[in-house]
Image (cartoon, rainbow, N blue to C red; front, top):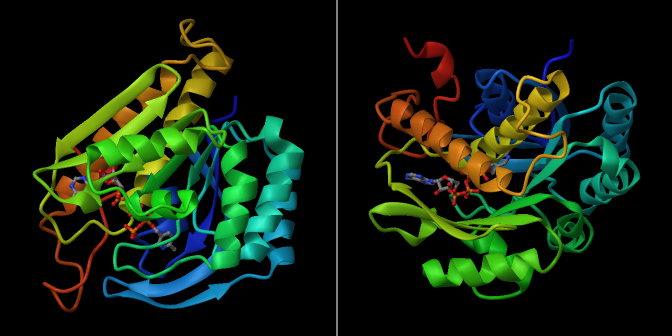
Length: 292
Ligand SMILES: Nc1ncnc2c1ncn2[C@@H]1O[C@H](COP(=O)(O)OP(=O)(O)O)[C@@H](O)[C@H]1O
Ligand SMILES: Cc1ncc(COP(=O)(O)OP(=O)(O)O)c(N)n1
């Protein structure tokens, strides 16, 4: 027996709100073993990122080599890379091990919710040219989608759809462009997948605790793919083949969005910071463990 396993390749933050910490908590909450490769330390807090410390490319490469020589992920999530060194090492390992990474989910992390750039221009270029074409599922917010396409960010749902369609032309099987930054009563995301285009809406949660939403969503997506893979492996669900089905993307992404909403609603009343009422706090990733 082996548990469903997701490899997260992400940055670390000391608050544990985003990046690797958010990923590992989300994976734990969803019953999936999480392995983690660190790309960068993003020093920050509820008040935002103070400084970025990118790991040398060979340190990122060595972590990838060690973990991939040892375990076979059911799904892999790529998050913040920080710069060209990590992006190049990750792209190379993805090319070499593509068939052994399970479903590959890319959170195209470029800008955080405070507007801080989390990747250099050179890193973003490697991400766009080398990684985007190789992934199964690409998730980008409006700024990231615009940057990947060299266009102005979308300003409405139709723009989200156009950008998702254009990004899918670059190679991913499915593309989710998240539109929370557009405002409005609902958080609207657009998914373009093999079955068509879907507008996914959920009630906007009015909360100061939204840091790490994209990280949490993409970790939850990877977790659901890993669980589907495990069902296929253990024969627990004969409807799901080991390669999944074309309808999996919409079902899995909708379910990951529901998980995200529950983490956001539960953290709404948290008072975590020494300076309440300022900044952006984390979600309650462990909602499934605390629910009575
Ligand atoms: N206030 C909110 N209420 C409900 N959903 C939200 C809210 N903010 C973000 N989301 C959802 O969180 C996910 C991540 O979106 P977004 O914040 O755009 O990404 P990122 O964290 O990468 O910038 C999306 O599904 C988005 O709709
Ligand atoms: C260390 C670290 N990794 C990733 C991010 C970006 O996370 P994301 O959820 O995409 O966006 P925010 O909601 O956190 O802006 C990050 N901020 N830090």
